[in-house]
Image 1 (spheres, rainbow, N blue to C red):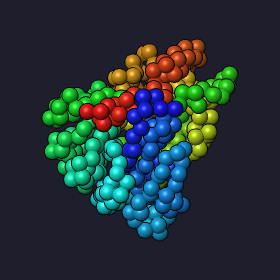
Image 2 (spheres, one colour; image 1 turned 90 degrees about the horizontal axis):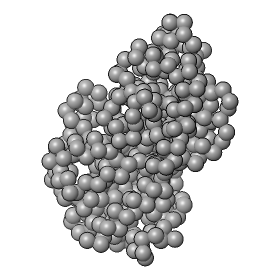
Image 3 (cartoon, rainbow, N blue to C red; image 1 turned 180 degrees about the vertical axis):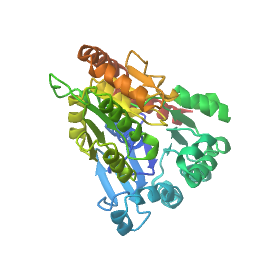
Image 4 (cartoon, one colour; image 1 turned 60 degrees about the vertical axis):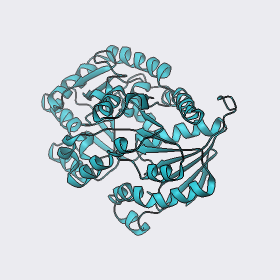
Amino acid sequence: MDIMGGNQMKVLYVSKMSILAGAGGAEQRIDRVTKRLSESGHEVTILCGRTDPSLDKVTVDNGRKIRHIKCIPDTILRLNDSAFYLVFFIFPIISVFSLTWHLLKDDFDLVVDHMTPHPTLAVIACKILNTPIAIVVHGFFGKEMYKTYGFITSTIQLLAQNFLRIFEYDIIICPTTYIKEELIDYGVSPQDIDIIPNGVDAKEMQSSDSPNNREGVVTIGRLTKTKGHDTVIRAIAQLQQRKEHCPQLHIIGEGPYMSELESLVSELGLNDTVVLEGFVSEKRKIELLRSSAVFAYGSKYESFGIVLLEAMAAGLPVVAVQHPAYEDFFTSDINGELVDDDPDLMAEAINKYLQDPSLCQEVGDRNMAYVREEYSWEAIGRETEKKLVGVLAL
């Protein structure tokens, strides 16, 4: 049913990574919001990078037409996990030709690009063809990113970020007040920016009964240096050294940092304590969240922190390295605890909850109710639909 009064759109979403291949929070947002748009009667096409050799060139999924662009040979994708990142960098350039062809052929009403962390060249094609364009800015970076991401990635990001100042997007959507303030300081007009947070499938997270005795710690995130899994692992090692209750730690995610984390686990003598789960199904992820006592997160940078909301929806207190992106939805000592990037401090916070099951239950119940009320994907999708339809009404 169309809830926008008969204003059906023909919209083209652009994503560097396939939403069908288990990518990150940005792809999850694209997936959930476009499902909502399709259910409301809008015609949705998603143009994305082919990050898995098994993906078909064209797939119809939940009413959406998903078109995958081949950026690198399948052989490279099969042989090297890091090839995932080659698609990430090559897609913005290669996709502009396919995007332009589709705009000419299919007459889309609106294009929605995603800055994750850099945009594609979609805005250039849209300006030439006079097609309205929106962009969802999932993160913003300053020169400090050179310390974390390296020279090539940082330089590309900082140069491409200038698109936000060079070109006029019809609407800029960001998930947090923190990113909006960064964009304004960067020179983007505040009138062009709307805040629409990320959401979670709260019903799915709460669909199964949790065990009477939750145990252990869980964390989620792609295995990269910036996600700070080493901080969480070292915190668990600290608990073991102090002869405190040493919980089992489940790390959900895959990525190029796997071998380094395996070495760290072995070096710290935690082979029987830390489980590197790798990529898991959504069902398994929910099972691990619902059976754990505490969610710990060591990420050094986040544009939002969707996994914190997922953990809260599953009824867990959260212990995380503090970041301004969390300020819109997370309050320390209410939803869990934010700490400095220090394994000792994280260990203390984790232990605080492990030693007090009633506190875990109290915070977990509060988190479940809060997320269910404020951060459902249905509400996020409805607000996004309203903003996009509004662009075409101007």
